[in-house]
Image 1 (tube, helix red, strand yellow):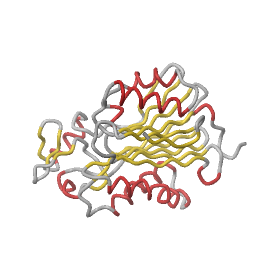
Image 2: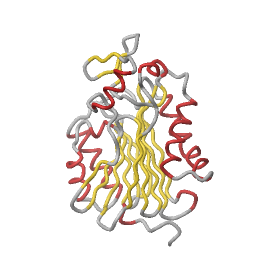
Image 3: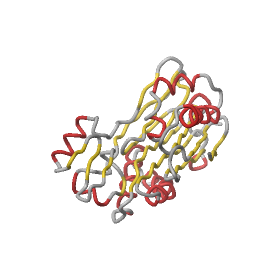
Length: 261
């Protein structure tokens, strides 16, 4: 397991989980642009190799910064970063799904492509701020069918017999012509004093843990590191996730509006 960040405010963990090798990567930038209260994060869950995920993790902060500095709203800057990454890896057969966020004081922008998701946990409630891009999403299923995609159970199949569970991704050259698109779902939220944690994670967490279970664990913890490591322990050691695991946690209540001390 690898961890990094600020123990109280923001922490990321990666774990190989039940896989033979780690194909996930992430980005976590606290005080983005040297402004307190700004946090940029992203989880990039690779498949078919780690090449696309590794590139996404490296390139994402700079691509977002360029778009944000050019005047794009945060959610549109996240989208531009995703689409720029996809253009850079257009000839790669491997791919990745992604969830990313930008927290600017109390203003949160979120983007996801695929089945990596973000959960907002408050004192009483919890809410997924992303959209699941799998065939279980009927709108996504119909979009794939309309594009001529072949479906086998829970997988979208290419002409060579390779399958993807996700219906959107970055990269995945051989799936482009059967409806696999990079366009992210976008969401915005304004945090309030009841909000406690943001949890962004790949399906290595969400396939073995319901959002309400993750929220219950998070509410018992007092630091971002404690939340991330508790979720990692539950998913890997207790529930034996068969996948890689990457979790980013940000403590909403500890952050001040951008520009304030």
